Length: 152
Image (tube, rainbow, N blue to C red; front, side):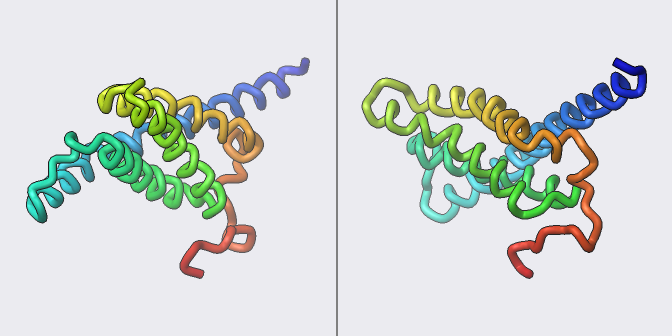
C-alpha cells in the first residue's frame, strides 16, 4: 500500500467517525432541548406524564432526537433521502422493542435503555451501507447535485 492510499483511508475513517459523533451529539442536543419542552407541554395540556406511557415516551424521545439529527444533517447539506434513512434507523431501534414490552418481556425502562443502545449500531449500519457518502466528501453537496428537499 502506498502512503497516499493509507492517508486517504485514514481520512475516510476520520470523516466517517466524525460524522457519526456529530450525529450523536446533535441527537443528544435534540433530546436535552426538546425533552423538557415536550414533557412540559403534555403536562400543561392534559396532565400527561410520559413516563406512564413507555411506548409514547419512546416515540417522543426518538422524535426529539431525530429533530436534532435532522437539523444537523440538513446543516451539513445531506439530502432528504439520507436523512430519512437515518431517521428510520432511529425509530426502528425503539419500535423493535414494543412487542417484547407488550408481551411483558421488557419493562418500559428497558425499552428506553435498549432503544438508545440499539440506535447506535442501527445508525452505524445505515452509514456503512452508504460508506462512500459518509466517509467521503459527497455529503457536502453542491447546489447543482443537491437532492430536492421535501418542500421543493
